Amino acid sequence: MTISNRRGCLRQEYSRIFDEECVGYAIDDSGIVRRRFDEAFESERTNTILTLNAGDLAAALEHVSSVDRMLLQVPMDGRSAVRGIFDAAENIFRIMFPTQNSLNSAAIRSVLQSSIQARFEGQSPEQQASLKTVRSFSEWIDAAHFYRHADGQTEPSQPSEMTTVVLVGQGYSFVRWLASLYHEQHN
Image (cartoon, rainbow, N blue to C red; front, side, top):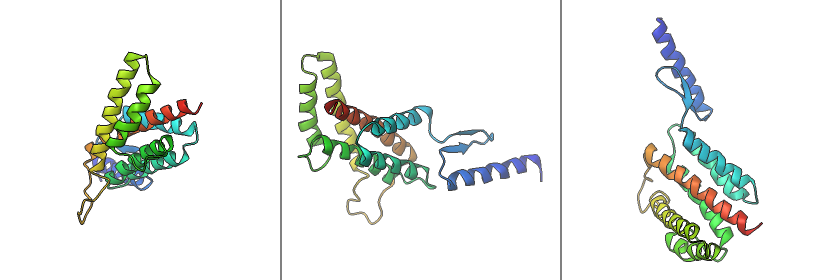
């Protein structure tokens, strides 16, 4: 066996082990071990977990933890990962606004937008930026809904890895933002 073949076999074996153990690393063609997702994604994930650990949001934290398992499966279960991060956001939203039954763009525009307007009254730049974030969150909710419901399909559609990473990465940001708003309300 040549050195090149041996390196290829080792890369395959280590890749198989990383996949079986669901660790967030992969081996590239040069044999270098790298994070499976980029630093920005990993940083957002870590900061979201830290924010959720800082309070009484254990159910949202469990949903976020399930996202890791779905992302690291082989093959990746992007649909379940998107559902998991959506469920984390919905959990926090429903704790913040107990009269709301579900997380949807109409509820966001009604109750969260009103809450943001009141919270940042007289702080024009903060209020305007936060209201734009509410609109972005509303758009993210609508995008995630494509993967939450099977819509009469016999097989649920899976987002591509690229779409999964974008939706989950943005979801981490929105979950962290909601958790921070929640913590501000309760401190």
